[in-house]
Length: 118
Image (cartoon, rainbow, N blue to C red; front, side):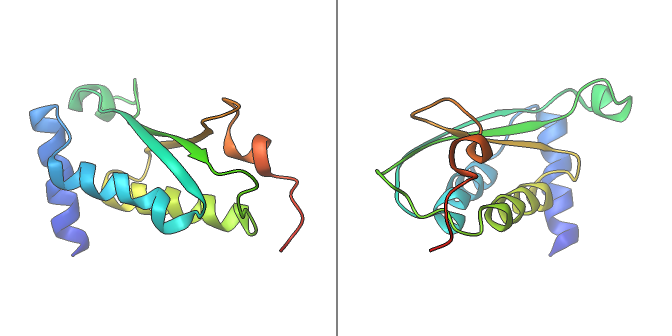
């Protein structure tokens, strides 16, 4: 399975476009790892293969998640780690993953990092 995912990721670099398969998976991850979501938008960037190989640019995925009021955010560090690892498994291990709170514009750790355990 891991080998097939890596082959699909190579196809992205050659085409310069993320496939529908990847978009579907990337779009589902926030709903798997977080609760109380109202809306999610997904942004992504795939550099040219030469730029990746030379370390000039790295791919990124940014989620802007709008949560319902008072969302459950216990184990936030584990949730962030899980979604990051999932994205990196699907794409490349150096993919930068950003998770932004849609209401405040802050990264999710800044917006919700100090909530008490539930």
